[in-house]
Each structure stands twice: as C-alpha cells, then as structure tokens.
Image 1 (cartoon, rainbow, N blue to C red):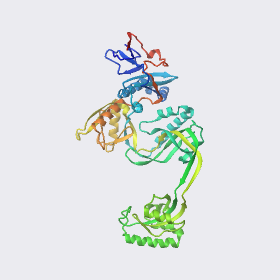
Image 2: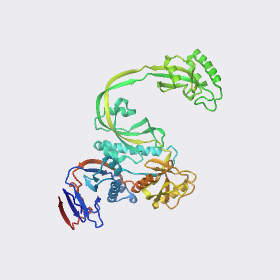
Image 3: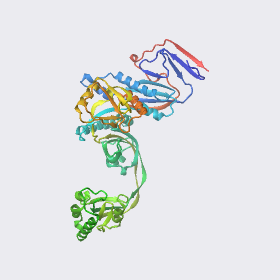
Image 4: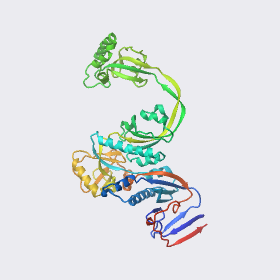
Length: 526
C-alpha cells in the first residue's frame, strides 16, 4: 500500500472483471490498489466511439461463417488500446468500456501525460502490413468500389451532418487512401472544380454530391510528384464576406518553332545537325513565316524539333514571367500580338516565336465568401500494386533478427494457418516476379520471388536504407499490436479532477460485471 499526504486509497480484491483494465495497479495477489487524487487537474479523459456497423452487417447477412461475437470485438479493441497506453509515459491510467445511447465506447483516463496530442496519436496508431502483387495500372473494379464506398459515406454524412467528424474519423484508412482533412479554408471562387459551389451552402451543411479532386499535386512516399485525384465529401464549417484582392500577372500566349542541334539541351539522338546548320535552317524558316504569318503553325508541324510542334502546331498556351528560359521570355514579352520574333538562341537551340495574345497585369478588389470547411478524401489514384489479401490480420508474431548474409537488422514474420496457405499460393504464382511489402501504406521493398515459401515464415528487410536496430524493434512492436477489428473515433476529450474508479453514467449489463467485494479498506493518510 502506498502512502502520501492528502490522498485517499482503496484496495479492492476483485472489481469489474473483463470490463476494465488498470495500469500500474495490478499485483500478484490480484488486489487492485487504486489511488484517488484529491487535487484538481492532471488527468485527461479521452472517449472513443467504436463503429460496429460493418460487423453488424456481417452478422445480419445469410452467411453464418463470417459471423463474429461483438463482445469479443469490443474486448479486443479495449485490450489493444491498453497495450498502446502502457507504452505512454503516464504516471497512471485507467481504460474501460461503456455503452451510451446504443453506442459502444472505450474511455481512456491518463494521469501525468506531458504531450496529450502524442498520446492520442499513439492510441489510434495502427501499422497496416500488406503484401501486394504487381498490378496492371487499370482497375475499373477498384475505382467502382472506391466510388461506392464514398457514396455510402456521403449518404451517412447527409443523414447525420452533426456527426461529420466522427464519420470522417471512422472512415480513414492507415494507408491514407481515405483521409480526413479538417480546417481547410479559402475564397470560394479560388477553389478548384465544383468546390467553388460550397459558398452557397449553409454552415454545417454537406455538399450533396461527391466533389472531384483533380489538378492538385502530391508527393508520393518514394519522392515522386503525382497528380492527386479522387472524391471529396465536404462540410461547410463557416463563411464570411471578405475583400479578396485578385492579382493577375502579365501573361503572353505564344507559339514557337524550335530548331535544335547535336549537343543542345534536350536534343534527341536523332538530331545530328551542327549548330551552324541549325541557325541557317531557323533563318530560312523565319523568312517563310514572315512572308506568310498564317502558315506559322503549319511550319511548326513540318519543321519544329519540339514535340509541341507535331502535336499542336507549336502552341505553348499562356505563360507568365519565370516559366521560360530567360532568352525566350525576354523575346516573347517584348512582342505585340501577331508579331514574329527574330531567331532567338537558348540552351535548347534556335527559336522563332509568334505571340498570339496578351493579358496585362492587373489588380482588383472584390467582396466574396471566404469559407472554412472539412473534407473526407477518397484517393482514386491507381497504384502499380494490387492487394493480395495477405496482411497483418493474419500475423501471429513479429520478432527482430539479423540477415544471415548482410548482418543487417530484419523483422521475422510468422503467419497463422490461413496466412501461411495464402503466402505459399502467392509466392508460387509469382515465381520470377516480385512481391511488394507495404507497412502503414509506405512501400518498403519488393523482393524477387525465386521459389514458393511454405510454413508461413517470412522476413522484411528495410530496403534502402536498411533498418537500424531501433526502428526494426519499434516496427516489430507496432506490428505485434495489430490493427483494430472495427474503426474507432475520438468523440470527447476533457480534463477531469482525478482518475475515476467507475463511470457514474455507466450502467453495465449484469452479465458483464462480476463484483465481489472480499475486502474493503479506507485509509486516510495525512
């Protein structure tokens, strides 16, 4: 028994079996030493709602083989949250389940946690292990499935706009294929596509259709820039009228003919002419272009070494200063509409430029809606990898070891019987190909498959760079914690005076609680 001034202690031999988990209290005699702080502050209470809708749908269908015990799902989630809480630097904690208004919750009370945001991140942290096979890059079924899922989420949001945040949190995936993006803001007129229409909504209203995201770019985990495409579900959080200063940069629209030479920037292997020959060819074409300006695009198709010449008559569209090399920019912005330049030399070769339109720089001030909004993003960018069904849900254990040839840290995986069979089938079908390994949606490596793997054992190396001992240990720990059997969402966060022995609003079912009070002692220590 601990003693300290101004604190009250209870010792209970058995309490709330199977419905609560105490940290830093259990001892070998199963007695729970519970400390109730009398001073205010220092304890944060986080309440997570468990989304059992998919589980309930499985139980309601006609296939009895996929039925699950809901109590086991809830208990499994509670246990995995407790594993995460143990890793936090909390002086004390209390984790328990409760049911309110037909919804199942897991409550977490933390004492002495310095970084609450990091604690919330760790509690919800899920490391998804996936094995994928090379895909075709064209998967209409995948796109249709994503749109169907997005449509279902949209309908749920339209029916329950007040629960948009909770719906979003329970929809997100560990690989960010579905992401919740709150706190977005901007002038409605400047938002891309049909996002501009959200200024017409009332605050709290959901945009009634899936908005399409396109035109924006993102950086992939392997450092590549790719266009972001997908569906958006949007809720308007607020709007107000503001003055928007609209600045338009000076722009020109131009076409060009490029005559390049061997050794110039961007010149292909087919280009064999010398620099002098290129200049002479450009000067000859310039004479033809000025004699018949209407033929400029046809001349570009016939003679230009720039691919735009063949595809669209050398048309470069509108561009602003800073988008072209200096020599080209200086010449283009000095021309009037319809005027054709002299031969202009750049690192790419010799250019003949014709300006077809101009937009002068301007600045206007207009009053319009400035909106704040939240969105759920469904990524439809096709992956070069396809799911195989082999993932962390079939993992029995993850341990660290050393590569017998390289001596670098690896993670050894052992799958259950179902996973072992699937791994053997996959590796047999992929002999001569590769099996992609993804952790948390991030590509790790793609080892070549030379033979089938039997027995359910596999290993992960860190690729490039390889694992360090520490990050291999950390990843093995995360993999062993697994993923939640149903989505959870943080629905409430508040400070409470002290850790609570029971929730006053919680009225558990009798079959969930066995309360045996063999011993009760109250000690006041001052």
